Length: 291
Image (cartoon, rainbow, N blue to C red; front, side, top):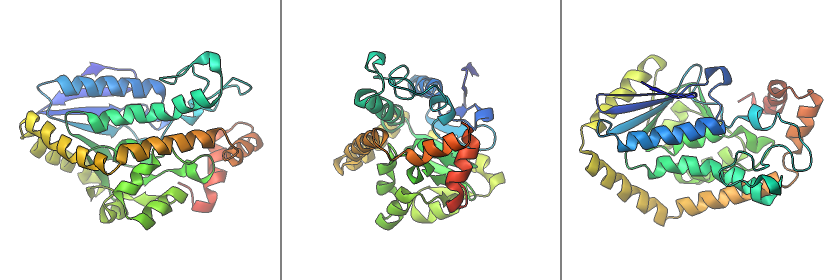
């Protein structure tokens, strides 16, 4: 077991298991977690003992998405606050809050998720509870996504904040009409997702762990170089169809959302609730029956 602040990492029987380990924050995706995830993925990629990777979450669910409490709870003002360049991979603090740092903030998320897409080894997302917003795309960009029947997938911020930086991925995973529903704010269960092709398999809660490891074990029996070539072939086919370009474009539109008034409902509700993020999200998601 290797030591990380936000992750658990272990390798056994040909399988590297990476567990998002911020259960007190519902495994929210902070920049620190994303950086450690990238480090763990690269370690697994180079480890001859690991043929396949399982990515899962500790506690109540896979992940609640990007850490809004981390980025939105700071002081806000001209050049201060989210997307000010202090943490974004390509951010420039001297530029403050503007188009450059907003783009660095948004597309920085895809830079980490794309690592899974481009990793030379298969990655399986094991999802229970919920995979919300950026965590939904983190789970769905994996080569296989296996969930419980009751797991919840979707991008709630498209209801009240912005267009969603990697939501274009949905258009490649589900039929057109369903992709539009998701882009407008609809959530899908793991059971619904299996029927749509959003996830590979949906199991009962008590079977998820064993079934995911069984499937991972089958894949781990294949030579890692052959797995690499097979994954590359399928990925290149989808890239020819424009997947990476669509996601990059989605991130650019999300940047425009951040520089416009689309987030007004969120910030007005946040002010009404005195900065209480939980109460804010409860109000905003009420028309949808919650998340």
